[in-house]
Length: 463
Image (cartoon, rainbow, N blue to C red; front, side, top):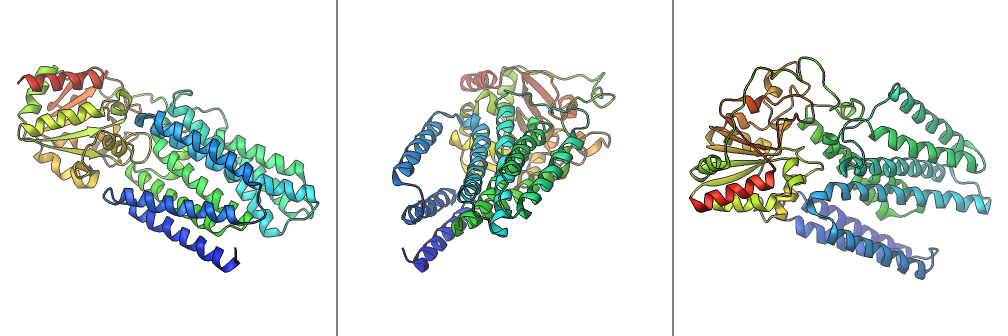
């Protein structure tokens, strides 16, 4: 293929990626965005297959069959509630791919006995380091979300010092590798090994409820690693696509940090969500909660003019999204209005609650972001909280000693009445009691969310 035509075709593919990403910003155009992005990817793959100097077509076809088969199996078998784990795993695969491509280019030059150009050597080091950190970091994130590891921060003495020394060692060894006139395999493998270890140690001290930020950040890393790989193999569309993923991931991470009133450094190095000791954890001593039965809760919901549902991770765990939709339909048939309030960091990945409710065919126009819905709570008869905790805790506004003080929350306590569905009185990720539970306007409906919602549906049908 002529060079000019190939480059022009890659540019067209990149334009599809950019337009597709823009379309993903709205639910109304998201499907079209996926299709445009997919079309761009197909074009990029076809162009790569027509290029010369790559592996045999038999190997490529085998890779497509194996990879496509695994992708199809995951798409069909992974439940919507397990989507965060799958996203984390796919981020890791992206990082691993960059690690392998960078390593392959290094080994090819070593076998040929050729000295790498300075720019290629630098980008190989970056591709390998960022890819390795993304790979092992994403695997740890997957293990935490899958509960193969504790969701709480895992810490040890001098952890930050060890991480800093590892990072310094990677820079020094990587610099030595770049400055060497000839490739040194020992240095290369040492850099890759330290980067793999750093990926593990960076993510283990991050708690489960910070996973939305971590997943977004690791997704950004995978994009940056892919972009570096594009420089290594001289592929423009890979550079552009990687840059898009990298920049959008960083922006999304910052947006979510702002929603928690915390810095990215605090998320990564603060070990937030560990055991809380002292007066904060005991601040609710002497207070009482008001418990409600499913029958009484059903009456409140059935005769409410407006209900706002606040979903949280507990809803995903209970896999009760379809019952929420059924409950909302029943309320609306009786003349009530039902809306859904989505906090930016609800769930375990960016947009987790949106995806979960969309799977239950909840209309997009009923989903509202925090800034859009907060003013509505004062005009709401019943706020129904399902599995959310810290994101509705009024202590974030009033308690200067609280670890979540200053975090923007959903104004659930402003509703005329609140029903909170929980298994028990366990604290949230921040390790503190939720002041909302002890509010005189709050009623607690204890039990598994799926079973409780099923009872509410049955009771409202009987009214």
